Length: 159
Image (cartoon, rainbow, N blue to C red):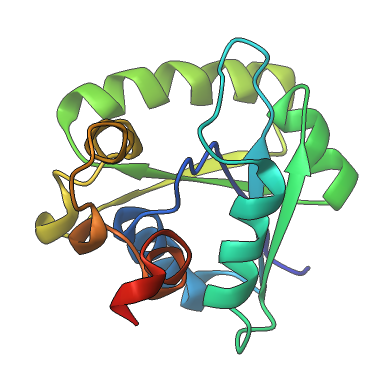
């Protein structure tokens, strides 16, 4: 059976923390779908299309990675793409407590879909999209937290 995984999130914007989790998950799965979730209670800074484009650029040489946009329940989208795994990144203990609650709910909804947690590299622990958005909104330089593809879009003069 093919090991297909969905890595859901808003990825607003894509950070080095996100790519760290994806890169370390590559040997574990045959296919990784990066699921850009549409959450009606959030107002993203960047369009879903822009976030997909960043992932497409970052992983243009990696056929196992594909970015997609979805809405609704994550387990329903997993069924749609035939994913048996959900990938989640953990930075702190508080992340685990929150993510475990979601994983338990997902397991109740579909016992065939398992959540896999990967802890982030310590150097990316402080990298969070919320912090990056705050830096960007206030005119700061967020480039140390972002992959090159994102930096090229946000800071074209730094190429």
